View 1 (cartoon, rainbow, N blue to C red):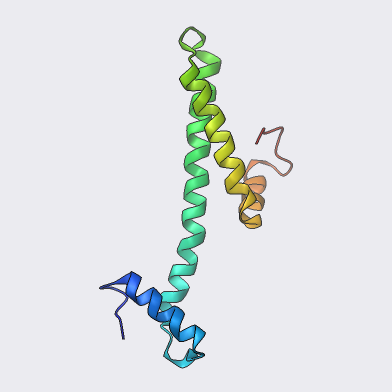
View 2 (view 1 turned 120 degrees about the vertical axis):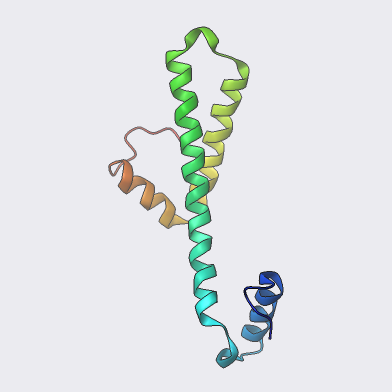
Length: 110
């Protein structure tokens, strides 16, 4: 049996094989639960990061008008596309975002 702490990839493959074989009593349920939770956390981290970058560039665009560049414009478009992609995946992520910004999106362009 693979140890989660020493080789997470081999451990994950072993856990998947046990599930497919129906050997549920052999599963490492504690670590499986941790990994499932981590999936949601990484999705949230990506969305949070993209939102921060977008906000920073929108503020620069608004208040540093003399420095506007095609690079800034590309970054804004790229982050908007990335945010839209993030929100297409898990419905729960969209609900979390809407709850945090006040319900209806407040005119947020995604």
